[in-house]
Length: 493
Image (tube, rainbow, N blue to C red):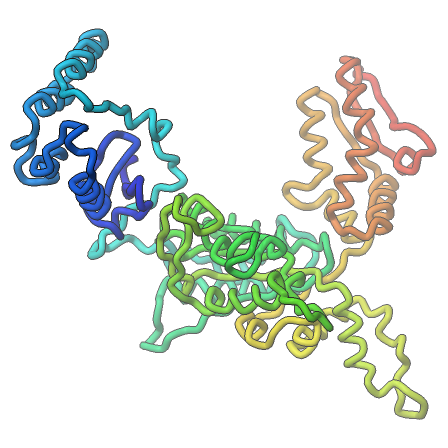
């Protein structure tokens, strides 16, 4: 694995931490500390004489790492070592004969162990860390000239995401400023603070999709974590550092690349403090406290190739100073908190406001303040580290119709492409689009409802069309969506 660090098979420390490694086989490396401990343990073992080992010669058992090579070693063992090292890979039969001869010549009590069999093959590449030399100058991951301006970034988002104009504008400016900060590091010796983002919006309004699209446009590693799986350190569940570990895996275990990535923590509203709770909240407020150092920027020890720290996985250090954290959540019932704040003067009299004044306000979430979020259950320190609040709108029927047909990878375009492979043209008329949008609005699960509805009525069509090669065009109508009729099928001319 060229370009990756070796990992000690005993202590699981990386080469940059443990120092020089002794490569025992393709699958096993041992650091000098573990080698010394193993040698000391063998020297002090009461069974060394039974194993045919001379304590004074144990230091010479590992040629190339300890001065003296095989000098002082038992001649039979040294001869066996030379024979095995000089084996000819093109003659497997001769190689096996040499191994058997070496075993016969070795002293009584000497055991032979195939380390490849012990390790089960090569070490998983997920636990390999990309090498970094201390004085090495690497090309910056993000260059200032390669960062698209906010208006260009929003124009790209418009091709994939329908609506959410204010959210796209907020994200474009925030991401542009963040990566300018990463690319330049300082500006006239003024350190620019990191601006993490908090996205608020109902389920299915496009929070995760916006972040995925941004990461793809910027070509930076992205990790999506679920806050519901996180628990306080020491309890069953994922540790806080697991979100950074996922980003490291997405960056191909390249720490420099990971330190310029994006982490999206979904379902962040599930970490809100539980009201009137007498038991320890190990997956709520305590997780918020643990995430403070990540959001602020700190050197974090993260496990490689795993989601929790233990003695069997290597660790590496990742600096979260330049990692952009975007937290998203549906925050149900937050509108009620906003309403109660806006209608404080409700009562009787000329200056009173009606309590139902804001019930039909579709932009109510845009009036949110940090005080509302704190009242919801997020601690002040956590909210303070997410200075940019990005509210998203709920989707109406017109938005659903646009989502169905306008984006580059619209759902209808995907089905039309599938049927094109069968040389069949798929057409949706306006009544069908309206009927689908109406059904999706009733489900109240956002854009996710669209695919579920289409999958339901497209099942029979996708099953029947391959049976008849004469079908040329299939038109989906509103009556078919509502169960009042069937699709219009035209035969090829």
